[in-house]
Image (cartoon, rainbow, N blue to C red; front, side):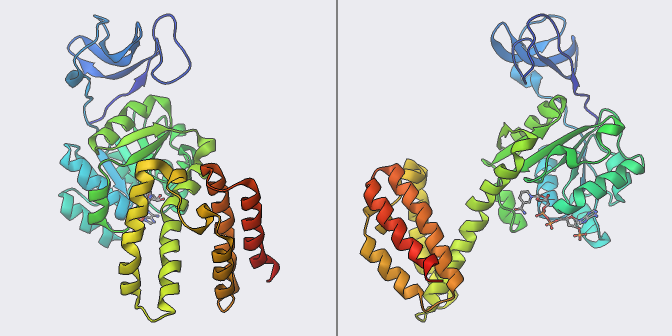
Length: 355
Ligand SMILES: NC(=O)c1ccc[n+]([C@@H]2O[C@H](COP(=O)([O-])OP(=O)(O)OC[C@H]3O[C@@H](n4cnc5c(N)ncnc54)[C@H](OP(=O)(O)O)[C@@H]3O)[C@@H](O)[C@H]2O)c1
């Protein structure tokens, strides 16, 4: 089912931003005409176009568009399965290999088609290929006439903006990036982790009500960001997720040096990680800092650095760089003086000086 999301600014006092005073979004037809979302006389809500009165929230729920998944990997599969459970019709799936497309299609009881035909059948098209494939895949679908006015096309990349969807706007369709701020290492865990996750939305304003509805149906929360902010937004997500994995890899490797197997090393460190994450969650990343940097124990750190000298210099360098950043956190926490901070930086710098 295709949902027309038509951006219709009405009346006096309209502004240039999102759902601000005087801006209305046509969500769907209703017995009184179109149902509009917006802010009227300072009240945010949904309004019957003719009566101009707020309507009940249930009526504000738009009809769910049919969806197509192009890229039957972890993210595409999780979105398709969860959205189908929420009442979205999955019109078709496509993928690079027939095996992936057919496996997901069998699970969803829908057809596996080529990318162009799958996209042409849906009101909302998700391109969930690897990032490098988003532009060529959407350009190819556009060239085949698979996009049309009224359709919404979304990718799920954190790094790229909606403009990566080549040929979508030219075909009169709307372009979005809907990035789930969650790690999809494995399908089942990803589906369990998704509720409560945040999604970053970016792209055509007129498609935002549909994007918000999708996030709502996935039991997520969302915020909007600009195209220009996407690279640093994504870098931060990489730090919080991927580099945490790398730090655990680094720490378990050091434990292996005195005879623990990788599993035992991880089991020994994991309660510490869990406790630290719980502390961060309670008091935030500045107040949660403990350890020798937070206490200003320069001798302890000098001992660490001496021990690192037997190892790969890259590991020493990494330890030093992270240590110097940690001095910044300790200064912000106020647990060390400026002078102590300078001394600690000098101890960490020795790592680089002794290269
Ligand atoms: N993984 C995460 O944690 C995560 C989190 C948030 C956002 N994302 C984003 O979500 C998107 C998908 O990531 P993912 O982790 O789901 O990747 P993935 O598991 O590697 O899946 C990508 C899928 O795209 C298919 N594909 C590759 N080239 C294609 C083409 N030319 N045409 C059609 N399908 C093609 C692959 O098909 P075959 O199986 O047939 O080879 C594969 O099934 C990326 O933009 C990524 O940045 C990922």
